[in-house]
Length: 250
Image (tube, rainbow, N blue to C red; front, side, top):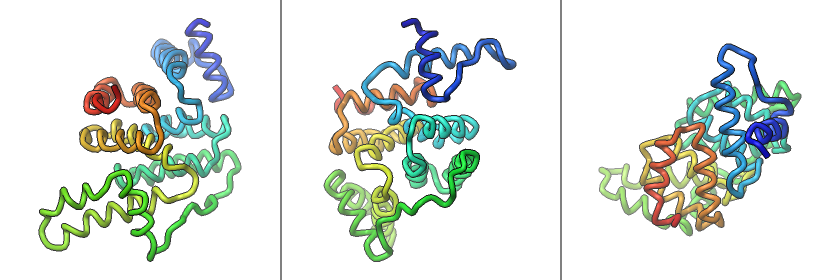
């Protein structure tokens, strides 16, 4: 199948329409974009469209490219992803990119939900309480990452030495990773591309590549996820992520 034919096929599968040809103010750029992403990148590797779209939504949330995020939330719904699954991909970005940017992405996502007649708020995804969030978070964190953060930041002054590692456990793993909607394997793979797209987080990329492998992702799936994220985050961040994780992924 020619690249242009693959582009039409994938574009139809994701968006229910045809790619642009000569429409708009910059048709040449759009042809380059669409044929590369939908005619090439989407056809390499083992990940299915559902996982690829969750990856895309994650990177677009990190980048705060909200018009494109809305388009791909629509694509997620078109291929059968549940609103709760999309929501979780966006929600779990918060500890890494901050709450304000995540709220921007949530607002864009919810616009698409309203346009599609999806009632809000969605069904609750919470699984922890104020009393259990640390214990449940630690139960997910410790088998994969041990006490690395607490040990590394034991030098912090006063209460910070305990507060910072505790907050990481309670917020990242307790409040978010325990939630319904996505399994641990998927969450770890999305975290890898999230950190790669963020930039400047080489240590964390390496740690979460290891975490993704420990939670059942294959080396090929991790590479595929990073490569799929590349059109949305650029080659330099792909190469940075691959370089820092090469020993784990060979």
